[in-house]
Length: 427
Image (cartoon, rainbow, N blue to C red; front, top):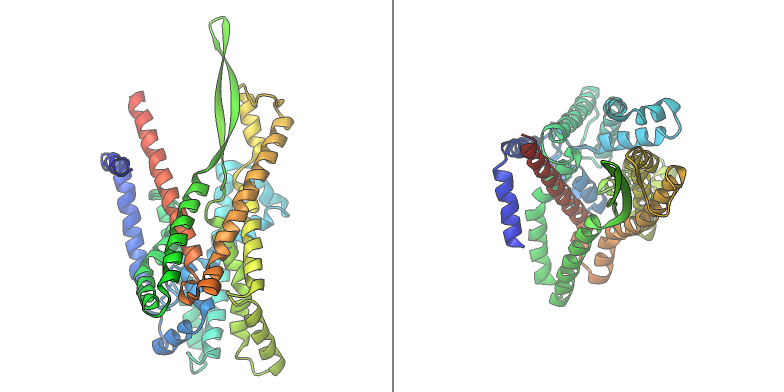
C-alpha cells in the first residue's frame, strides 16, 4: 500500500502541469486561512468566545463556515450564502422553464446558472449579515445600535463571502478538486488541533473503555466511507465494431458510483437544518414574551442532539442525495450516447428501455448511498448519547467531508495523470 502511495506521488511530482495546479491550490488555501483570522471590527471577542462555548449549534455552524465564524473574521459567513443560492437555483430549475432549458444546454447553460448563483449570493449574504448583526446584538455582544456599524458589518460580511466564493472558483478552475468543498475541508482540518486538545481532556475525565470504543468505531466508519465512495455498480455494455467485412463484437461496462453526489448532500442539508436554530437565536432577544417562548421552543426542538433535528437532518441528506444525483447524472443522455456509438446493454433494447433500466438501477444504488450518508451524518448524536462524548458531536460530518474531499482530489489527480499518459502516446 505504501509503495503504491509513494509511486502515485512520484508520478505527480514528474508532471509540471499537476505541480502547478497543486501549488495554486495550496496558495489559495493559505490565503483563505490567513484572511479567516482577519477580525471584523466592533466585536467583543471574549463575549463571542463564551457564546460559542455554550452553543453546540454555533459550533456546528462554524464548521461549515470554514472555521471563520468563531474568530468572527471578515469571512464569518463563509460559503453558506453561496451554498443556499445554489440550492435555490437547483430547485428553481425544476419549476422555471428558462432555467430548465439552460440546464440542457451543456457547458454554456451551466456557466449561466453559475453566474445567476453568484448574483443571488450577494443579497443572501447581505441578509445573513443583517441576521448575524441582530443575533450578536440580542446576545449583547454588540452593545449599541448604530446604522453606520450595521452597514459596515453587512458590507464586510457580504464582501467576505464574495471573496471566499472567488477563492473557491479559483481552485475549481486552476487547481485540484472542487473549490467549495476544499475550503470547507481546510476549515475542518484547521480545527484539528483544538479537537485533539478536547479529546485529551476527555481521556483524563472519561472511561478509557468508551474512548477505545470510539476510536475503533471511528476507524470502521472511515473505512466504510472510503468503501461507499469507491463502490460502483458495473453495467455491461456491448458494442459492434467493423473490421473489414466482419463485425467484431466487444464488451465494456458503464460504472455507476454508489455515491454519485459525493459530499454535496451533506453541505446542502446542513445549510437548511441549521436555519431553525439560527432563527431561534435571532428571536431570543425579542422583548415580546410569546415570541421569546416560541424561540426557546424552536431551540429545544432543533437542538443538535434532539430526535427531531436528527430525523430532519437524515431525511434532508437522503433527499438531497437523490436530488443532486438526478442533476449530475442524466440516464436519457447516457442512453442516447450509447445508441449513437452502437452500444447497448445486453437484454435491454436501445433507447427508452435503456433509459428506464439505467434510471431503475440508479435509484436502487442511490437508495443505499443516501441511507448511508444520512446515518453517518447523524452518527455523532449516538456518540454523545451512548458514549457521553459531548464535544465530539460535530465529528461525523467533519470526517465524512474530509474523507470525501480527499478521495475526490485523488480521483481528479489520477484522471489528469491518465490524460497526460494518453497525450504522450499521441505525440
